Length: 398
Ligand SMILES: *Cc1c(COP(=O)(O)O)cnc(C)c1O
Image 1 (cartoon, rainbow, N blue to C red):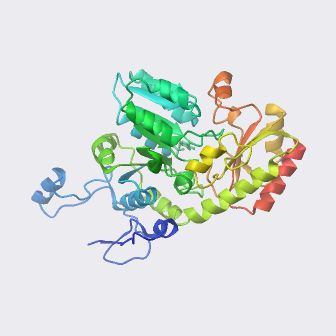
Image 2 (image 1 turned 45 degrees about the horizontal axis):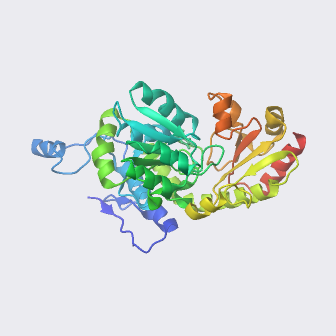
Image 3 (image 1 turned 135 degrees about the horizontal axis):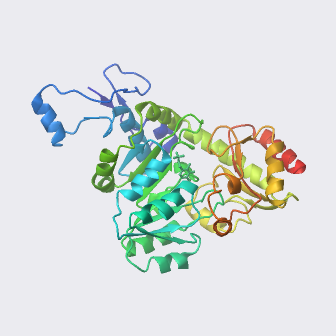
């Protein structure tokens, strides 16, 4: 009934991003169809019975699986080199499910401390209420990881580069330590994108994305995805998803499939612009520091070169005048928009201290490298010369 697109093993990622995972219906349509259906029918009672006892794999209900969502999942698994993937309604649903599906009261999680605000909330507030101990370490410090992982641990969670201070975690070293402690390594790979860093190749077990960011990349929809081995996805994650229901809508999965078709073009352009901006702003007298993984003075440049194939689409910089200067800078921008989103076609600037990381104490922010003058810019698809002009003009005004 459906015809699976054959993907040649020698095709490169930009090609696979356009074709992988597509199943054509009998109409032989060019684009992926949107299967806007909640349920599926059976020819007879025996077929329904077989579907429910899993002896005949097929779609039974869109909370468990849907053909459009499955195309997105297969395209993502192909890109990441993962055994399988599951889509979710948002990035946070992906992070929560990837952790909650594998822990129980009495278990222990070790996490890097520099995290997206809601990831931090899950680990510091929600899971401890349910009897899961969460230990935070400075993700840059391999000795701190070794110490924290000297006890049996169920899971490790980390973001690299971290949001917003672009701190890196050594994926190979931490994965080796984690595995010795019995832990499954879960990496939130949003900042790097699946094109510039593939954590599974560096020893991680599970990768999660907010597909809201670069994968849609055009500010239209929320989405998330969890990738791992076939065994982890089907045996550990799938029962949790199936019964808790953070399902991705087929409409949103279709938007994300279209996003994947242009992911390579967009990320390549955005990362090149981000690097040009970081280089141009380095040494600006209004700035105390400029953060970008491929800059010569980036503290973890050697590690970035080992595990990333590019610096990414995000630039961080700190204004010397703290919060008042940061606000003057933001308010003087004409082209770059003030927004807490990222990975969009439109360039977006945010002041983490007063927005995404407002909930943290001053000490917690300091520990994560979020000073009062820090600005995070998500570099979009505009002409980089226009972006540099806008940023330099706003800095002069700050
Ligand atoms: C945005 C983001 C999330 C959450 O994703 P949503 O799609 O907004 O739920 C998680 N981790 C990181 C690093 C993010 O940037």
